[in-house]
Length: 419
Image (cartoon, rainbow, N blue to C red; front, side, top):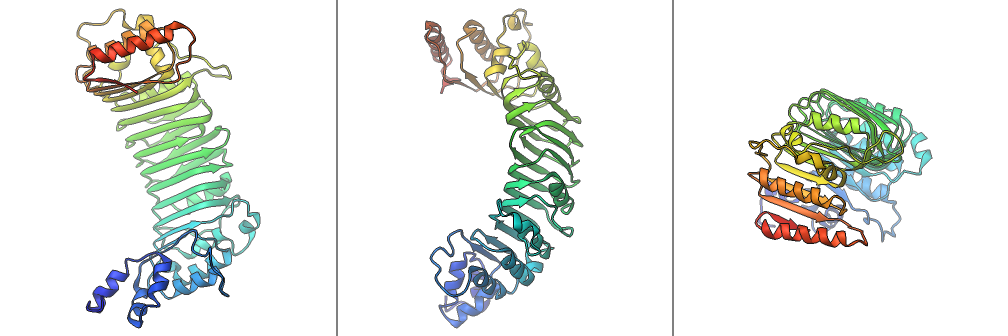
C-alpha cells in the first residue's frame, strides 16, 4: 500500500464503508488518516456501540466521523441514535447524501413525532436524496418535508402509519420509480398517484380491509397484500401483478386493460367470485398464472369455487406457459362436465410447466382425469409437479387416490414428479 500513488491509495480506501474500519484506518498512519475523508459510504451496524464505555455519546462519535468526510454519498445507520443526533449529522452532510438508510426504532416513541428535532422532520435536510430506506417508523402525523425532487426509491419497513401522513409523505416524493411499504399497519385507505412509478410493493398488516387506489401510468410491477378493495388506473404497462390477502376478504378489483401483463398471482383465504372472474378475464394474455385462493363467497360463509370448464379456461388463456394451481381452483377444473365433449382439435399449445397442489381425495376420479388431460392436451408440457398437502382421511379412498397418483407418475415419469 505504501508504494501506491496517493490517488490510487485514496481510491482503494474510498471503497470502505464499515465505520469501525474507517476508525481503525485513522489510527494507522497520517497518510491513512488523510485518505479516509474521501470515502463515499458509511455503515454503522446494529452493534457498533455495544461495548462502548467512553465519555462521548454514540451521536457525537458518529457526527465526528461523518463531519470529517469531504463528500459522503451514502449513510446507513442501524445503531440507536436520537433525533438531535440525526439533525446534527444531516446538517453537516445532508446536501451531498444520495442514499440514506436508517433504523428509526421509534414505533412506540410518540414524543419523537412531536419534537422539533424528531427523526422524520430531520430528513428534509437531505434534499438531494435518490434513495431513502426507513426501518421501524412511527408516522402518525404528516411529516413537514420539502419536495424530494431527486428521490427515486422509497422503502419503509415495519411501520405504524396514518392515512393522511402517508399521503403527505408520498406527495413529497413525486418522482419515485420504486416504492416499497412492507409490514405497515394502521392504514385504511391508501391513494398513490406517481406518474414515474415503475415498481410498487405494498404489504399492509392488520385486518386485511384496506382500500387502495393507484394511478401510475408507467407501473410495470405491482404487489399488494392486505387490501379488500383495489382500483388501478393506467395499467397498460403492467407486466407482473400479485394480489393477496391473508387476513381478510378481497371484495373488488378494478383495473384498466392489462395488455402487457405476463405474470399474475392471486392468493388468499377468501375472494368474492366476481373479483376472481375479473382477474382471470383481465389476465387472459398471461404467461405465468399462480392461483392459491381457498374459498369464495360474498359474505362470511366460505363457499367452494363454481365449476370451471377445462377447455374454455385454456382457450381463454392461450399464452399460458407456467400454471401453479392450488386447492379450490384445481377442484373447480375437475368437475364431471368439464371434459365431456372435448373438440378433437383442442390443444394446450404453450403450457410447459404445471404445479398442482392436492389436499383431498374427494372426486378422485375427476381429479385423475384432469391430470391425464393436462398431459394429453399439453403437447409442449415439460414438467408437472404434484404436491400432496396434508391429505387427511381415515377412509381407504385417500390411500387409493395416492396409489393412483403414484401410478400416474410412473407412466409419465419423464414429466411428472411428486413432492
